[in-house]
Image (tube, rainbow, N blue to C red; front, side, top):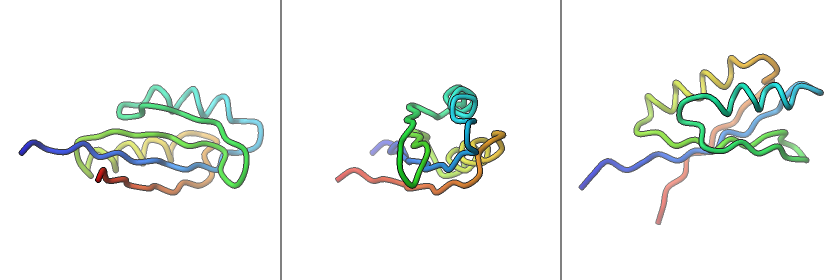
Length: 80
């Protein structure tokens, strides 16, 4: 049985007016598959696909370091 891919969604709150800059910086990070700008409680949803938790930690840490990112929450998904 092969290793299963980890899929996670990172929810972001971004500084007002910095959505485009943050989106551009994040979409180029390794492991990031999609970036969605949203309206509501969260400003952005990032879809991440990685091979293990260590890789997920690296991606989330990189996202948190992007200027303009104020808060993140990470949701790890499983397939049934």
